Length: 166
Image (cartoon, rainbow, N blue to C red; front, top):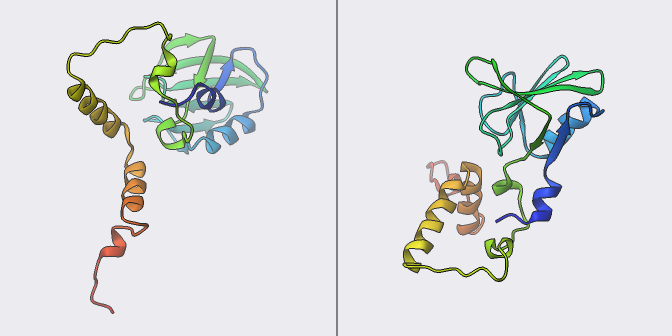
């Protein structure tokens, strides 16, 4: 799993009433790998319309609509992607990028539980296979492509094609 330090370093926290430059926010989102779009509809996207920044964090079921008055965060709400209607007011939010792609520093899951914790397993092989399935499902297409290139010694799948032009 991602280390606590990596998670903390890659989390953008915003609170209602906080003064922050919107350009700073968009720069941070861009550096975290978020995609600039006209309307957000999936995690990893953000949109800017006037004094409003919509952002879909990887740690949230719904995107956030952050409304500014000058450089002050005036309100934060979650909203429905389809209808664009507000769902719930928030006093603060934590915006997290796709750490499966950006996270280089990882730590063992066991480091997060107290040392005196006793773990019992009934079927270790099943558990290991299940963890691998969950891990594989979490990989994004980009991460899978990078993994394939690394496994093929730096040769891309396109590089293996023979087109007859040689």
